[in-house]
Length: 163
Image 1 (tube, helix red, strand yellow):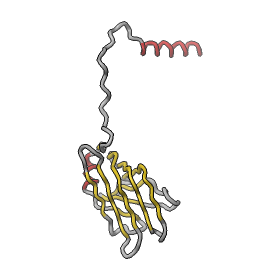
Image 2 (cartoon, one colour):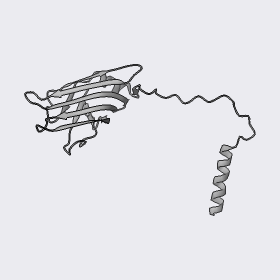
Image 3 (cartoon, helix red, strand yellow):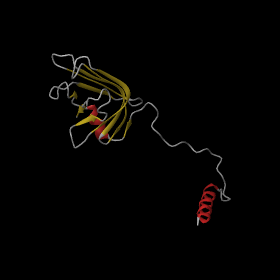
Image 4 (cartoon, helix red, strand yellow):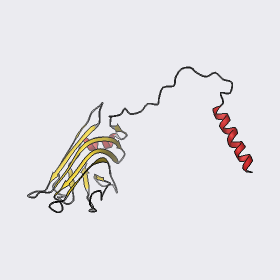
């Protein structure tokens, strides 16, 4: 039985790699069309519009009712840029995002850049990382939530960008 299986696999592979007596084209095959490096891949126009028309950013430790600003700068031949910040009224707490949106899909986007949280919920807390981050809409909520919740020191940070 095992010999028959090996023979069947070998014949299948031979059939796939054999020229079969036909002519082989000397013209090189062009590579598949891909998004050029450095250009935001937009898979959902709805989500692209939501990001462009966003209604601000929040971190739950600072305030859910008073949003900070989130600015998305689109580009045709480069990555879209996201810069967002929220500051605690009368206090030192801050959240800051700065980087490039790599991909925008249905209900999500991928962001390559810096997220920094300082002095919240406690003074002296300083969390900063520069990496690829994932934001997504869950349960039909009106915002994209950062999916890396406990990325710094074990506290759960809810960073939301509203649309």
